[in-house]
Image (cartoon, rainbow, N blue to C red; front, top):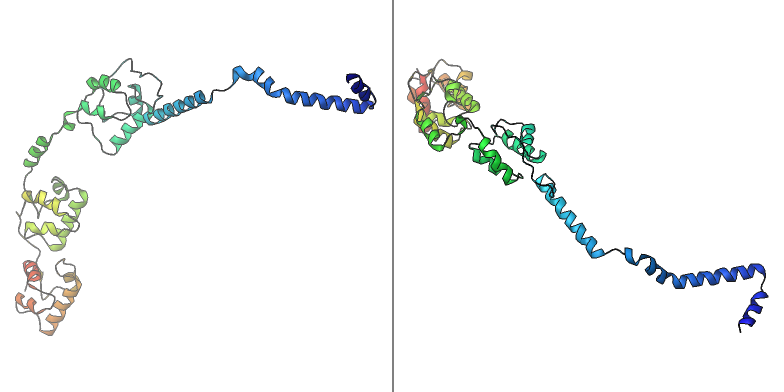
Length: 293
């Protein structure tokens, strides 16, 4: 049989014999390829389960590094030398010299810039993303000025030491010495007082535009009227514009006053204001302190 096949193969042309040989070789190689692959690569096959475990471990360590601001696998590095410091007056570079990461130092700076205060050495234990061992080492080196260490008792004592304020003579700086009164409220109170022509009652301070009742209640105990002199308006001689500038009169009532006195040859008595539609008992009690004939 083999002789017959060889004889038949010899009858093909040279090119045909080459083609048949190549085709047979490729067929043989294809049939053996799986076994060859196993033979050559069996020892190097990838363990996909182990690979996935490695990926998950890397992701976990990466997340820890991002959240803490330092490599999760790195050992905590304590500074070789510490120095005394006020945590309220530090720079980011100084914090890093003490062993804080860049992120942790930036977080502390942001806290202080927004008005946060460290009032005791133990407060630095609250710093986020810093190893507790490092914070414990730093606590003995914290030095905070006594003025920062005000307790609630100190604050109440300081409040009791405030002196009474004459609401008709106090300037803006004196008003700012009261709890809850800043430059803005101080200017508004003084401005309202000038437009009125002075206060005749402590309660009038509460009418200052934008002044919260809670703030007024805090300062009320420190307010008094020493100078009771007020700027008085002549009801028959004052022009409409000046009348309208008074907070208790305004434009509509000012026009009515001028019209009434023109129609009646002037006011004969202050009580005639009751004849005006806009003047009720509440308004009258307010403006009677500032008018005369």
